[in-house]
Length: 198
Image (cartoon, rainbow, N blue to C red; front, side, top):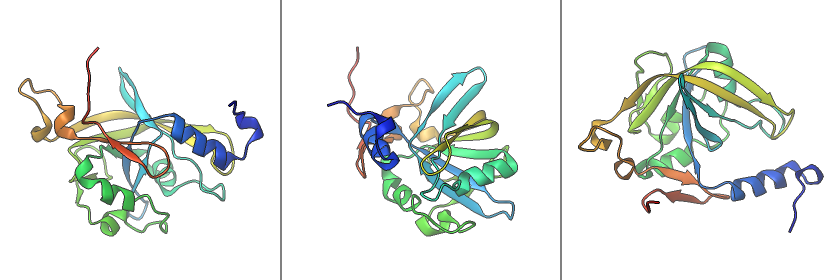
């Protein structure tokens, strides 16, 4: 089979991509509106970029009507966000926050999550997440226009909050203890519990 994205409907292209690029880590991004209302949403187009400066990226796609998601609007307003890692223990609550809610409706309340004050920025962290990256905006890169186009958010990591419970005897993060989940195709997810060494 050969698949030409230029000749297919964008929704089909999206479906093919999310099934081909797996597993994808999840950026559970918390932001805050100009009125101080916290927002929370998961994004699986996400990864680290470099370590000098420490930076990461995630890419929220536009809504079906072509408008930007609340996360992008909030970051454009104040230039701050937190990327929270998603462990298996809170996978269902993460999934609840993926819904399309009204602007300034707090997903923290909807999913029964605990907002925790950040150390260096205004948006809150998720207390139930064992790893949190407090970030300031470096750049927004628009990719395409309209429905399912995206805005790549590049953030500088100002501070990592790490739960001591996920550290090994050497003081390093132990992936087994974090028990991160990843996104597969459709509504399928995976755990990072199976490993091998090369």
